Amino acid sequence: MKQSGREKWNKRYKKGAYSARSYPSDLLVKWLPKVQNQSKELHAIDIACGTGRNSIYLAQNGWQVDSLDISEVALSILEKKILKENLSIRCINKDLECTLSRNNGFLVDANYDLVVVIRYTNLSLINNLHRILKPGGYLIVEEHLVTTRKVIGPQNPKYRVAPQALNDASTGLEIISYQEGIVEDPDNRLAALAQLIARKPS
Ligand SMILES: C[S@@+](CC[C@H](N)C(=O)[O-])C[C@H]1O[C@@H](n2cnc3c(N)ncnc32)[C@H](O)[C@@H]1O
View (cartoon, rainbow, N blue to C red):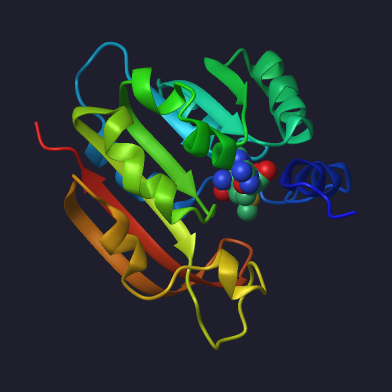
């Protein structure tokens, strides 16, 4: 029987997937000071957060964070870190593919200052994210890019974006920065990435 996305990811996290990748995304670290405004309460959502390396970085920098993932195993690892460090993070266990197709409210009522999607490929989701951003709010996205180079990330091109596809999916947003290329991660491994910073017009 074919295993569901939830089963697949739970199995990976039970085996310790990404446990050595505790550092936040370089893209997030570079752009966070530029997107942070003077508001007292800043709300972000980290979509497909995994065990929360980027959520934790956001919370440590004063943000109130919703951390969403399909894997309850990943979220339970994050919950332990939240308790240990007393972080302002709320975990949400949802399958984004169902969320989109059933339009069950997640994309309707929310209103974030910042939406972060790091290394989770779902272009139809990106297409809809302007709906959960406040006017003036920012979107930070990093996706694995189709490449012939030997790099980390999914082997199946279905889970990578074609050149320009991420740029084209950012409907309703003003693009601040868009880059594609080979990037060296802090663990010295190479990744082919498309990186987008966009803003919802005020
Ligand atoms: C490569 S990991 C990236 C995790 C995290 N963003 C990071 O940068 O460390 C991809 C994540 O997407 C989540 N995911 C996959 N399919 C999903 C879905 N349909 N709905 C929500 N999350 C999903 C997985 O559980 C996994 O945590």
